[in-house]
Length: 72
Length: 480
Image (cartoon, rainbow over all chains, first blue to last red; front, side):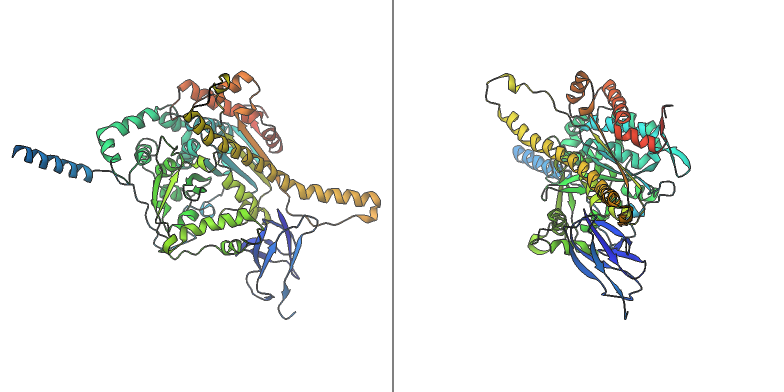
């Protein structure tokens, strides 16, 4: 099992591989591999999506995937 | 002249009989891919069945032995009352998914179709019937022999017709869709070419651009229980490319991981999916399915993928990340046997049949052992984060109260892995008796009754099931 935190200034839903999979700023569990992360609509964030190879994480050191507000 | 007439007559009879030869029942094409329609987990209503308590049942293969054992477990779950979210209800009414193989698929499919009426009907319609003898009679009848003469019609096609007529009343997946209720029942067969599970769900049939709603439930059960040798594989048409289907995004991502080998299991799953939609020289126009037990005789691999991957079509891991699941229960009903053999009592070189049988059975048994180990590993993986984080917090707090750590943790779940298997019977004599039962579609009534009872007993004796009952204030047979 792998662990990620998708960070964003504020709570909002997270999509992993084009489907809802939890919320920002929380630890999410997923299987290892290349995954696509985005925050759905409204698309007021950057980058619009990220493809990340997730491996070698653990619960104490989740991989951080950062999104920021557009223009912020 | 007379001989010529006779020859002409014989030729005409042969032509007529060839015309009457059987041909497999073709699965219908899908007009247009529609993820909101069809037999899918998310399309089934669950008003009275919460996600918070997520229960998965797994029914193994093993002919009528497996069907009766899993039926006994269903009876026990019906009779186990729990308190959940302020209501008293049967634990059976909280079952979300059933994944089954071969003999276990008869029970699973019947319960999907008839719900609570299963308990009045199923023993008489299947468990107590001499199905094997009836199938042989059907195959040896003039009509059966004529049908079997066709190259695209096998003994499993005949069996599917028999099950449809005698057990499932001609129901198709459209009936299950119209009932619109959980549990989501996954009957698993094996794709002979990829060697992987072939689950009878619309997500799988999307790959073939075929409409599962037009497939008889009996045909799915026949594919799941097409025991190699005795029964033949079943054929399905692949219309891939004709319905506007697109592979989900994860397939391409996983396919990119070939060289990096980050998750070879996920990449292999992606490759299997891509094999169905391949075009040109690699196109697979027909898919041949054999017994689900060839790929996984427990029926646990598909649920394990759903529990440990966010990319499964009914991913439980996704539901956990969405904080919808608090308690996850997996009940494995494993009717595996290990019949006594005489070979070690003699110095003679084992014969061909004995050697070939061992070559087929031993890897399957080892694979089943590993499958169950994967379940235990999954439980550990879910418990590990909480253990790690609480350990760190305790270490920090021991140094100084000011060292208290705020470590974010994934959504915690309570995971109950429950196993019903003859292996866990205490008495060696009783264990030996059950582990020497044959794999057949016909058992004496008293044997069926013993299997039903032992299923109940093994469930109630399982320590994790006892913990579950305690957590859910469960009662069974007046005992709480």
